[in-house]
Image (cartoon, rainbow, N blue to C red; front, top):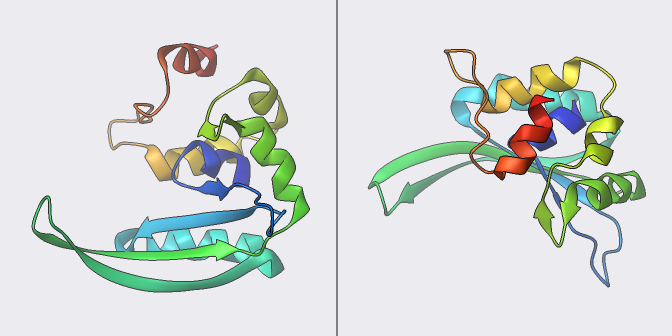
Length: 135
């Protein structure tokens, strides 16, 4: 679930001098609350606090509601961070893809970034990353 969700909406906060272990950040529209809660359930004791928020987007003048939270920090997330984030940017590499060994990763990625037409949004990745994903 983690490896697939990180291809989508989930991200990892980088380790810092005074906080040397990474943690996961989860954010979903309130419309996807059930998906968020399933991820929190899977994370179990690793899941930290979460809360629902509403905010005004000044670009669209619409109010959006989200549910967001963080996992607890843990050294296990540092290894994942080092394989997925190159120069502090989420970057698809063969090394990261080799870590994925279960189809559930694809399912969670699709639930994050999939469309009704069956496609997965990859617009945040470079052409070479998309080509790597397609092989």
